[in-house]
Image 1 (cartoon, rainbow, N blue to C red):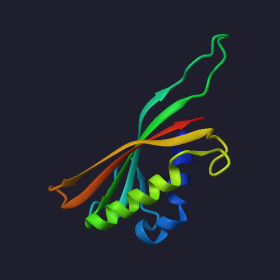
Image 2: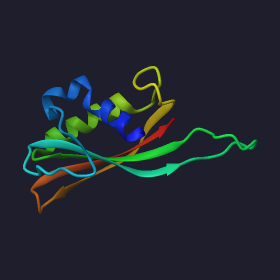
Image 3: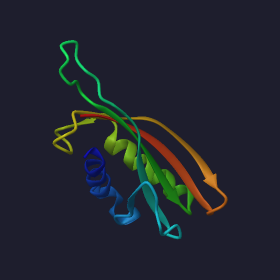
Length: 126
């Protein structure tokens, strides 16, 4: 499953070890009180067919939400993710991925939980 591959990628980025310490969650985080963490989820999945009816490269978009109580930290995590993930391919990370890139990102503040949030859309071809 591509979700497991994305988890392995996000949780093994060396530059994030001191910032999120493996706090990578799929779809939700039960421990909302943590200082900073990532939540990722599948936003779309396209399974195209080639003209001869054979399967083509699948494309999945993932939404990655970065949370932190500190604005500087949330931006630092975003910068690390964009630098690490944008334009990467099979050779850099997982056997199943042909190409991935950061499609967009936007930021905001969640007053209900008192955290800064940046959302990244990661597009993966596999």
